[in-house]
Image (tube, rainbow, N blue to C red; front, side, top):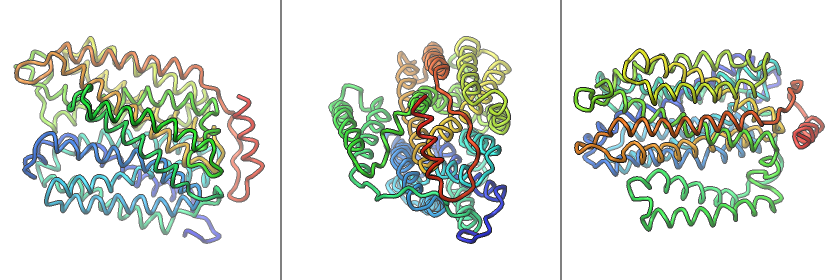
Length: 484
């Protein structure tokens, strides 16, 4: 039980953490395929219903690093319960929402749950034996991608058999159970970062993240050259350097710029940005490609929402298996090598999707290869970040890495939407060349991710330190990382 001298077995802790990550990841993806259903049920329009996704994206991008940082300061177990509680409250409100406005507000509350992932990595590092950390981080990181795939599989059947409201009831039940389990079975953090929470830094960071992601996610519909889009991009360009300068001068920064300048950290974050562009774009556009009616367009497979989810099930299974075994691979070959292989395999599989997508068995083979790549790369990114930073900064560093992947995903999805829909048919469906060109863009981004991964400096694995004062260990980590 939290706060007792006898600490919970790390395997019990891991089960609780996985339940929290799975709940959050399901909420990321289950709503996407059923937006038309929600649009009709709540009597709204397409432009408005997209805010169900945008509100969640903006909220998660802001709260993921902030909750991670607060967890480093006041206790990861405590903030894990808060993050899971926000997911549960948001899910309850979404399930009962009588209007689109209430549903959008509920999704913004759910975004607070983005802090689950960095808190999970921090707790794993605090509580697990050193030789178990890489595997546990890899599995929990892969669960984020796995949940995305399972959400696409489950969305159709849940809506068909029950209703779209159950897309929120089910995660709510999971998060309530996970929150209670976290309170009673996850030990409180032995590591704390001293100092206050820098509210000014949090506001500045929130401002540039919201302006950037709002412009990127809505720019396609507003117009990239529209006054609103330009104003948001200008605001980002002004506020971002102000935030960086304020953090660098602060005695108690929200995001330590010295940590962000560690060679391993900034190179892994760059890989995360490029990799996120490909992975999240695939989640967004592969179902759409599979659902395209082939008898009308000459490509696609005319699948229903449920069928397209089942077609992507092998990809989800491959992602999970790769995440589970990534720890063993990392122990033998190193997380850097696993990351290079994952990014390279992403590029190779995307080549197949771009130029050989006429037969279902080929698409299944290519998407399964993508699943393996996603699982390997996701796990390796998380492990490299966890190993590169002091233990007291695991939460915020993992949160920023997850956030940068999200920013990459938003950028990639926006670019792909523009490329795929360019020269669309009179009926609004993309032409086949649109997908070919869009997938070609992702070939380039994943190849660049693999290239940058080759140059990621490696921080040597350190012996796990039992919970307690670790000032000397933390100092040695920083010194080692800075030298590299």
